[in-house]
Image (cartoon, rainbow, N blue to C red; front, top):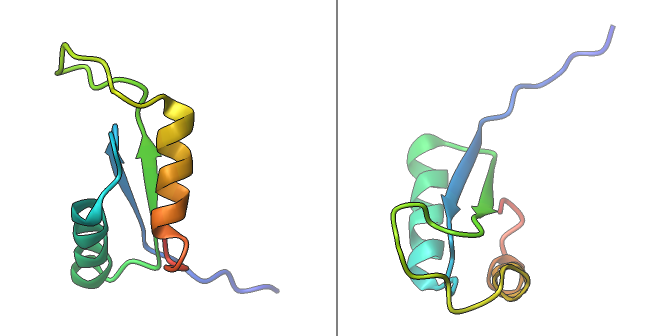
Length: 75
């Protein structure tokens, strides 16, 4: 019988327009405070609470997000 370990996973959603050090800071805090094994960023196409559209395309925000989190294996 295989034993499956349980992992605590977090999700941080937003438009990340652009992704910045503040996103990294709250991500690290969430990992530590909530004792998460992984934290995923969910990049929204549009914030439903804002009338203005993001300045960057979803592709640009995804690429920049990947670059900013590449050093942290838990993101």
